Length: 179
Image (cartoon, rainbow, N blue to C red; front, side):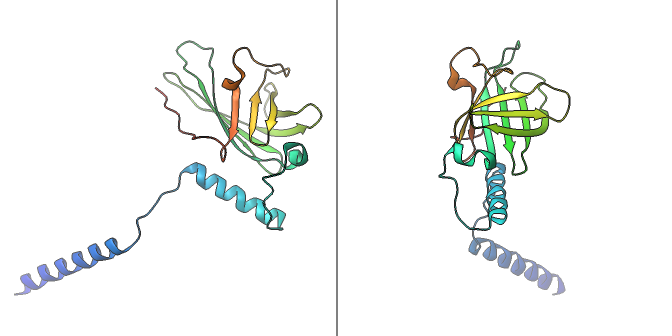
């Protein structure tokens, strides 16, 4: 009798858990991009304090406060490399984080941190790394698109659309298929 009571109690508990799971809404996991964007918007709102959406302003009017996460898939010149996945994060204190991942066998992500500054007159974003490494330059096409340039600010050879980094809220998607 005790055994049948225990089996009945377990079945009853299992049915209760099943019913609770069916009634609760399905859990939806956010992507890392959505979480980063949500955190960035919350940080901006808390720093600005005015509750206004400033995303509609042009790059020249907000260049000193421009920030966001930019993604791109650039051509690669190395052997057995299909491209380079770049993620550039610009924050409110003019700090940046650049993550570079070549699409090749035995690839390793590299990280670069430093300060960035805008040159409104030239329409250039200058990345100055913390460690001894060359500065990087990107042309400001608009508030959501940057064009990767050579270290001295010239356009790279080939089709320029292949060197674009787009802000995450404007990019089609950030997933890249890498072999």
